Image (cartoon, rainbow, N blue to C red; front, side, top):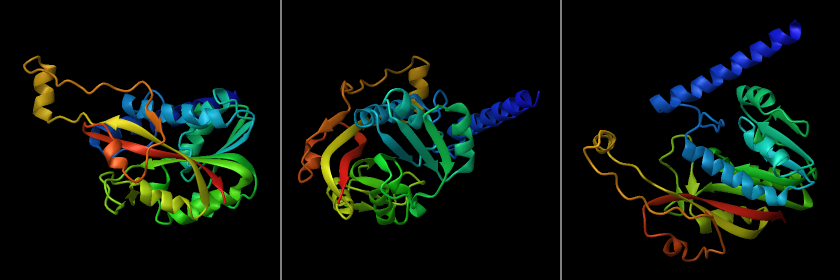
Length: 263
């Protein structure tokens, strides 16, 4: 009986968390979280692609998923990436509670923790740090903490949005403190890591005026032709010196992704 009550309480809690995300999508002031089945399809696709990419590094290894959010990516690394263990850490207690219930897995543990106060040392083979560093006032502290948490032959997989100038102190996303272009971000990484590989993940912008969208929905206007999506959104070997010239000639936004080794 007690187990049934506890299960029901957790189920109701997670449902409220999911409804909060849905409400935020309507008002524009919601959670910046990936919740499978509740986040916009484009957001879910982007997150899945990044974790699918990370799976090539995790088989049989001990993995840290820093700022794991609601834990879907951590579970994915255990299930699809065959990680020996995954430790998901996030600052938000509500997200960790959600993760522990909705994304429970025998090889995954979740805990509340601050990435800027991480004290682990020489513990992990792989660290995943997706869409986190741009939220922080002290990005160099995060990188130093991750370098210390990794074993000497460990690997950091990190991503962040690509800015259109060296440093953007006022990004369009209100949750972000700052964003960087690729050369500037590589310089930041090199304080604590050796950059082994660089990738780009493209996302085409398809915003249209509200009136246009309504007219298209009513069949009174024609939808614009969308640029074709590449089958593989991750591109390797782009030169940071002339990066902007390498991008497709369509409106876009995207992410820079790196595989790094501790110095």
